[in-house]
Amino acid sequence: MTDKTKVLVTGAGGFIGSHLVTYLKEKGYWVRGVDIKYPEFSDSDADEFEILDLRRWDNCLQATRNVSEVYALAADMGGMGFISAHHAQILYNNSLINLHTLEAAKTNGVKRYLYTSSACVYPEYLQENANVTPLKEEDAYPAQPQDAYGWEKLISEILCHHYQNDYGIETKTVRFHNIFGEKGTWEGGREKVPAAMCRKIAEAKLSGNPEVEIWGDGEQTRSFCYINDCLEGIYRLMRSDYSEPLNLGQDRMVSINQLAGIIAEIAGIKISKKHIDGPQGVRGRNSDNSKLREVLGWEPSISLEDGLKITYDWIESQVRESKNIKAEAKSESLTASN
Ligand code: NAD
Image (cartoon, rainbow, N blue to C red; front, side, top):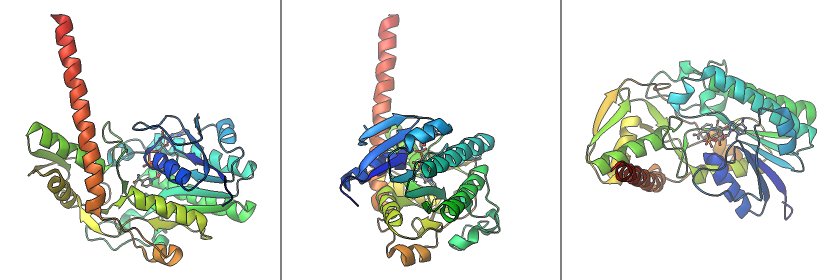
């Protein structure tokens, strides 16, 4: 890297994007962040932050000007509740974002382009058991992702492949497996399961009511990767010469019930699980990290417990703060009405 290589991070107002901006600044890059919103939980460390809707071609041209690398993280996304209920919106918005961002990057002479795909590309028929065989990159085909979110990710992966072959722009494709950490959405409907579970358990702790709702029987399984490992993996992949899709996640699989148990222990409370109807996604999912180890000579190493401790503490403080704000607002309105 020359002293001030200029890079663009799209989705820089989001969870992974805002952390990535900070990480790249620490590495000495000049960073432009772009999003339709500013980061919710801290100021951005970007040298320049532009509010742009990347579904629009003209905005993509503006975003990708004068940078040599693009980390493409912008997406209309959320946890299972959101993804399973907004297929058309997700397919439309994310297709436009990715078609226009990659074409604009090519037009502006960008050298390297990292696309953030997802474990949601893997076919439903390989994920029907909780004790699932870990998913290898080549398992993505024959394709049958569960949701429109996964279908769009597959198409954009293929788009990157052809742009590299046909136009010479160097593309990288990473398939994340459930990234979690502090400063991510934890309420409102777009939060993912680790954040939602931390919030529910923090609420149980603060209210003294030990009941915690879990969608389904809680025996569905996933692996979870802490944000700092994710950032290092993204960076190593961008610096590598590998251009095929690559898993990035932990390969320790836990059930949602086990996840709840670990978080309750961190919170220091006993919970009683209440299983309710709700979208659960595939029955089981885990990452096969063989290719990751082979290509990057590295794999995530931060334990689930260590990552969850940091995440839980942050979410508990957010829940406390929001309770205080609500209590203050209530007492102000009572005072006003007296
Ligand atoms: P996030 O929702 O926190 O961040 C995405 C950002 O994109 C948001 O800030 C959003 O405002 C922005 N965005 C949405 N529409 C936009 C538009 N039209 N123009 C500009 N910006 C727009 O999500 P995240 O968890 O940080 O995910 C980052 C990337 O990683 C996404 O591509 C996501 O699909 C992928 N991914 C994440 C996970 C995970 O576990 N977090 C798993 C698999 C894949």
